Image (tube, rainbow, N blue to C red; front, side):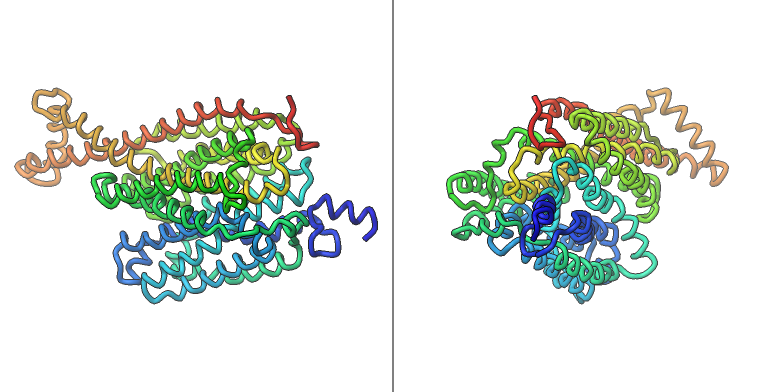
Length: 530
């Protein structure tokens, strides 16, 4: 290979098994296709759980294990992906994960019973868990530092748009065809991804030379135990009334003990399955904390808005999915802009500006009532999507900007794990706050439902008069208190949603303080600027 070709290959990070320089954008396509497919599957099935339950003769509560099992296995593999890459070879491991995910998707579509579906989803989650961090690490290594913003903007389109697109696409396919098609459609995409990875992705020399000397069995067991119990508690805690359930207390205790043991073990051995020493880098530590908060902020509205629209406004799954679609439009517009601005504007200013936009969108969503139109959510969702784009691209580039290339794979696994855990914590938190908040507001409002309250007496008379035009006056007098109480329950739930959106607004503004703890990273050199 001549000198210029060698330099080109070295710049794009393709000095591994390929004997020719590869355009980094071809590498980007190769790694983004399977990543988009995997992220899409985290949300596309959620709207189809009632259909899956009915088709497989199970309850909706039982069917949720198809989602929980996927998230658990996905979370376990995700932070260990760098270790597996070093042990088996990154390209080989990437191909294996894509093949496992594709094969498991077909098994999910063929599942004759819920138990088979859950086992197939565990296998699918295990195959898909490594795709996000591996693709991110490959992209950051393939592009020079000056183009990291552009690369992450393209990668972010797949990772951030997919969860927004999932409920809409899942609802439409389920309503018009079958929930099984949600899994079968991964087959052609997976086969395409395998061909692209085989053709364009290679292992850099430091991955080939970094095979661990021993297998960290204890670390993997502790990691699996911690994440499996934690994810189960977060997903099932509200249904079990949290710590009033004995098994929740046991699972929480096991999760805490295994987490502490994992930290001690991983910091003491020479070849850990997760290298936690990377958190000694201030940018990565602060950036990961912010990315965890981003998981809460991104996924919480995606949970709250469908619940509000379906439970209080009477929307079906597809209609509520379309109400959130403008967020994807905002992301689609914002990602390319964020990629261009990342080389022109200081990253901390971009991140802070994006957080302000997200806070503004959450505040707009907090001004809802029971007469709100679907169109009222368009602007707030577009603003939120645009703000997420401005935050996501520079945050990922800044958090990883001061790390060595050989640290990228391990760091990407931890980075994405914390985003996923933030999402799980956020979803559990907001659903619990809605349930508990509705009860609290109901207790306050009920105190005014008394004959001594002039507003209540006036509303009771008005309701009785309105009912008397449809039924007899006597029946109207009997029915009126029930109608008012139903309205009280609706208002209690509405106020709980309003509270949640306002808490998200406050969280965004508080998080801005962390932004200025980051060191600025030069786009040209990949070093800090003081």
